[in-house]
Image (cartoon, rainbow, N blue to C red; front, side):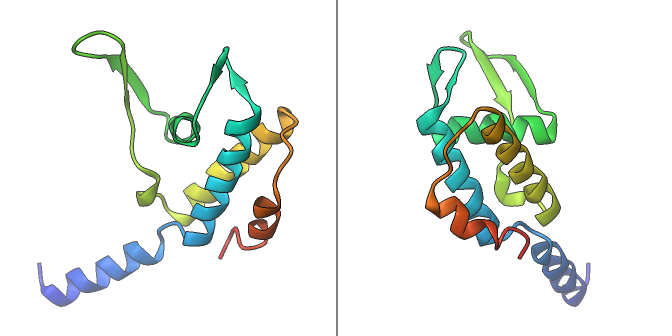
Length: 116
């Protein structure tokens, strides 16, 4: 492939990726949820919650692990488009409202930047 074409395609793909504001908003919400919600008698970290919501958005699968347990076949959020991340933030927010999570000031400050 021609180098100029590769450069243009790369810019288009990068321009559609989730923004740093969206990423900050996601982590703020996940922090509030991780501090306030127990999931099936387990207290989960922000990263654990991120995997749960990513699996819901991307319809990911679980498979048995080599030495037992289950392995999540997931994808990182860094490759998500702006729209996918907006959908994920909406899902996280709806979950937080359903679970009566008190949202912090960081969430409120970042919420206005969600779609930048």
